[in-house]
Amino acid sequence: MDHHAVPKPRLTVVTLGADDMRASIAFYEAIGFDRRMKDTGDEVAFFDTGASVLALYAWASLAAEAAQRDLPRPSAFRGVTLAWNCVSRDEVDAVMAHAAAKGATLLKPAQATDYGGYAGYFADPSGHVWEAVVAPGIDVQDDGRVTIPHRGPE
Image 1 (spheres, rainbow, N blue to C red):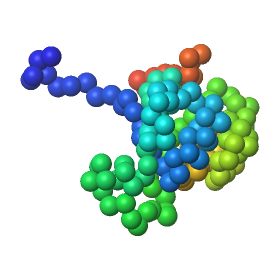
Image 2: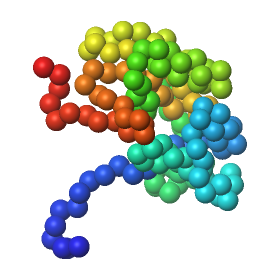
Image 3: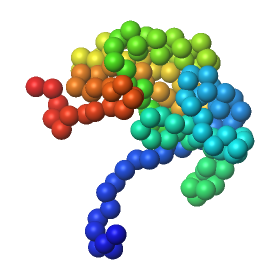
Image 4: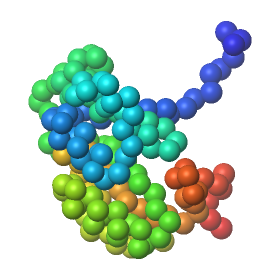
């Protein structure tokens, strides 16, 4: 690689701090994510998401690695959501019901959005917020990857 070339940015892994690794691992397996490299036990968990990797790591350990204070933990919104893009309103409703049945906390029922989509929100066992959404102009491929046009809907 040319040492003067600007590296191409990419998001490859999202790591979530987990309050209870076993409960979080069980939750993500229960909602259908495929765990990989299971020999890491309860220390760290990696899940295939189709386009990138979702990782779980003990919250206190993750804070220490990132040179951040572990406490006090945020009780308000953390300014981050994860999205599960869907192909239809029916799929959004199915994702919300499935997540709730597997232990998610429902935060906001799925409903029409002001941008012409349909979305609901739930939280995982450690309070990480997920959006289940169908959005105009964002297509979900058969392999689960999303395609986003260069320009928005006209």
